[in-house]
Length: 242
Image: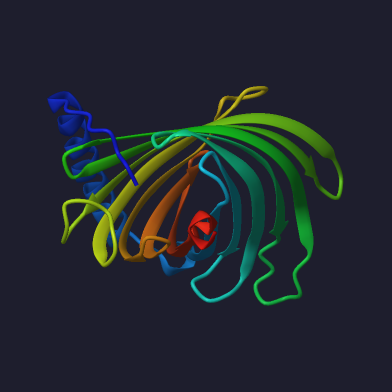
């Protein structure tokens, strides 16, 4: 992977402030965790490279109200990526989301289903050992409940910082830290939707496989909840097989 350097002291300073702020916030979150407010996400992400310019994206996420399985949401998403260059990726796709009620052990009922289209742009740059990813995503959402159907537009902005720990760059056998913040805004009603702040420790087993174990704090409206997360990324490059 080629990353064009972005030598900016201001960028470096902002990044370090974000990292320190994130750890302070996570530390405060851990200190105040209520076990009833601790859920879990198990996630699988795949990007299969087919061509110099094209790849396919797929993912599945199982989200639970509790640390042990207690289904809150099942999310599946697929799409296609156009690699304009190593630092700019354009994507589009669709998603299917099913939400379940928290019935505390009673057989669950499906409460909300959603079909979604999405388009996004990912921009990458680095400053020394700090690797930045800016993701801008636009979503068109068709939401069905037992009583009403609705349509919503939403925009999302994610800033991710990845820091290799035992090496200068990401590569095989690299231990790394990943931190991101993502804000969600509606376009056709009250703008504020939610915010997600995330920190994880990861290991890059090979150029195509890494595993991350982390903690996410999500604020929806004025309510906050924490989630433990396990994420597996598998990104094979089929160009090498030809």
